[in-house]
Image (cartoon, rainbow, N blue to C red; front, side, top):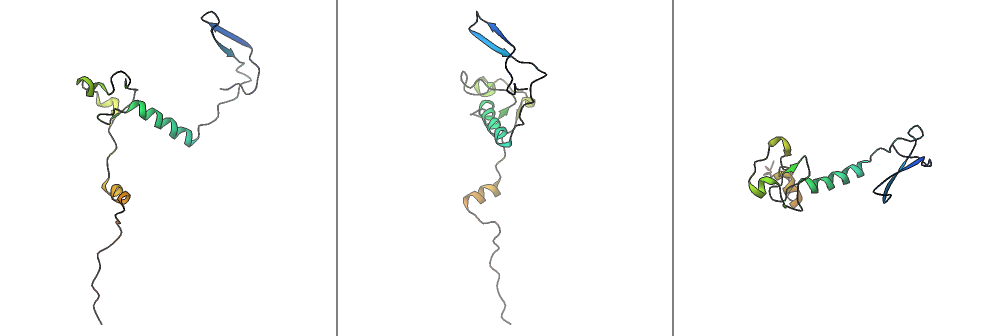
Length: 116
C-alpha cells in the first residue's frame, strides 16, 4: 500500500523522537504499483550479488556473509551445505560460446558439383 497523496494522521516515535514513522489511513491508501520487468531484473541482479559465492559459483536462497567470510561456509571452513539451500551454477553451453566467438553453426561443408 502507498499513501496516494493523503496527509498523515499520526506520527509514531521511538528512541526519544530521533526515529519516527508517519501513519496513514488504510481505507484511503492506494495499491502499490506493479513491478516492471526492468525493476525485477535489477532486483534479481542485486540479490544474485549477495547470494552467490565467489569461490564455487553457487547461488544460495539466502544472503551470504560475504563481507566477513568472503565466501559460503563450505568454501570457508568446509561445512557441508545442504543441497536444498542452493541452486547449481548455470551450465556453459558450447553452442552459445561458439556463437559468441563468431563460429558459424549453419555452414555446411562445400559439396562437390557433378558436371552434366
